[in-house]
Image (cartoon, rainbow, N blue to C red; front, side, top):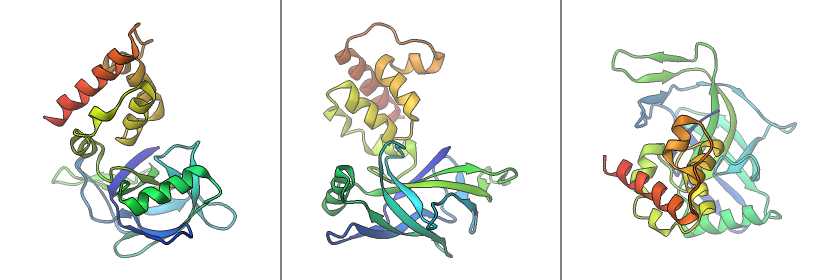
Length: 215
């Protein structure tokens, strides 16, 4: 499953748990050179009521609600409802109100023949399967998330926070776990992480992300 993030276009409605906006925009080229064509969502995975799973940070273990989605001329519009009986969903609503979460993202697969490279080098996504939409902290391309979050990563104090941050900026759960426990080398070679203290692990990841942010 691939992820595509964008700046937030949603509004929270009081304390009801309802919120709405756009989970994806058509015609918007991301920093990776991908753009979703109008009407590209050919398959949408939904429950028996036709609603799409809404997650926190693409974490399948943390569903926070359901949403009704539709494609219009602008993008993938949604009407969402947070399950406020869930403590995580209540936390998300509080952060929406505070403005400390600012993005939406989609989890999708590219269907066969659903991508084509244009003469400009941009990859046009024309046929996608939507699995879920997510509320995320930073609503941009993963590289842009690292750049924007550069000032915030100094707040990371332990391995769990480091792992959570890495998932937020676009790494998969497996990649984030490997990175947080062993650093970039452990991810690139795909082997067990070397013995290292938690503080050293965190410092190595922060150092790597800061280097990325200056490139």
